[in-house]
Image (cartoon, rainbow, N blue to C red; front, side, top):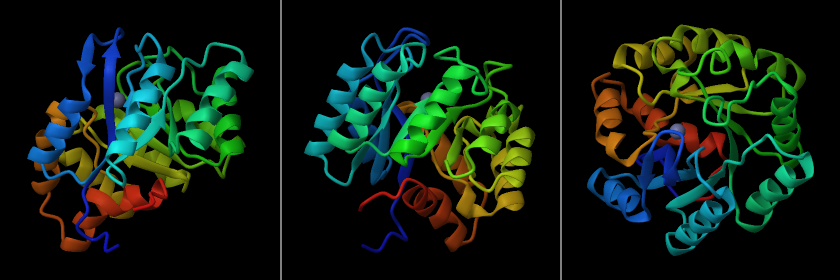
Length: 250
Ligand SMILES: [Zn+2]
């Protein structure tokens, strides 16, 4: 398939969230995709989901109904026994076809450099999937630099920084990505100045479009459009970076 014009939203959520008091339905996501010309969405549970396995099942059903349009990212409370964590993640990847796992620094109160952070990196390495890591609000765990010790230990695990430092820590996100070639940036909630600096420093192939919320899709689309990128760069940021990073089977 020609992927030059495909728009991929690398980061959106479905279901209830008791951490941030949010709730987005399947219809919220599909309606936003239709009205904003989004071809593909990568959908994950919110970190405050009462049962992430139920949400994983609903993402899998949504994906079956919308093939090559909806892909899943797993998100599991990491503060439990490794066997329990790994068996749910393995089910998501092997049985449900999910393409990545989320490490939610603030939503799950997890230090990426700590023992449970190591467990997530080991699990991702074993299942050969990338990790999306929340960065920005939630310091110190959400500081991009807090991931550096794991990047040293797991050089083959691709990592995408959700929110790419969220503006205030975007310089740190760029610095981390400059040092570690396995690091990519998803700049939802950043300003267009931040996103422009990322593309200038790293190239468009290291930056991927994401919204975080159905209601934020038009805002982030306009942010990218305001950068006035050339056609190749825009096609990278809006789709091909994510297609390559997550190895999406389109
Ligand atoms: Zn998110």
